[in-house]
Length: 262
Image (cartoon, rainbow, N blue to C red; front, side, top):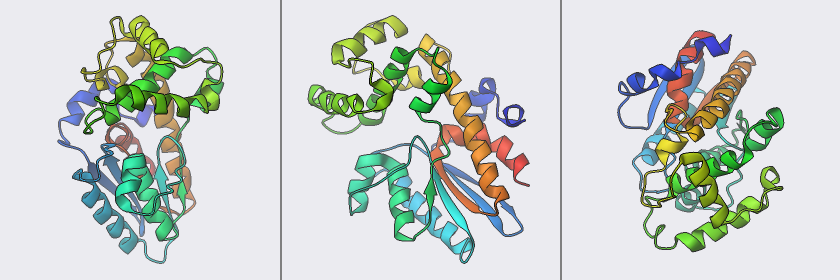
């Protein structure tokens, strides 16, 4: 079973030390068919060091798969970048939008093998939806808080985020506000929300510090299973694959993929 081949969460911290600074990559090759896996850092900064690396990795992938059936995989949800220049695309949707932008230009199909929050809620109606909303909120902050001016314009930025979330079916029963997410934060994390604090620790599925970590781990475990299963499916169809997902997914999934695709 795929579950038994994934890296155990308890070994993540030790294994992570072997990789160093993200992004990082690994490849599987068999009879001319390849998996190229790019473990990204989710930066929205076009000047981040990962983007020249990803662009070169994409070029390498195109070269080795010339004339062969191929597909690009991204996480979270299907992407539809509307901007026409690379910098704007990255600012809007980090590496997921960027690789979709490049793939669209090369007429290479893009798919999302992930489980969305809405899909997971339908799978697990018992799951704490408030905590799931908090995870979404803190993930947004974690991705943006290093950008210039984000903290200074936090309330305006939050209102824009809030309006986007209200349009999503997964939250249709919730009345989202800054007061509400702060209240959920205190209930789940156990202290008042602090914008200056690093939020990544609370949304990291490889930690067990808070109730939120435990809930996120449940969701993440299902995501790893689905993503690896989908990659295996595309592989059996004879497709070469470029997977551009977060670096944590690479570390957890690599042992399974190296066994399943040979």
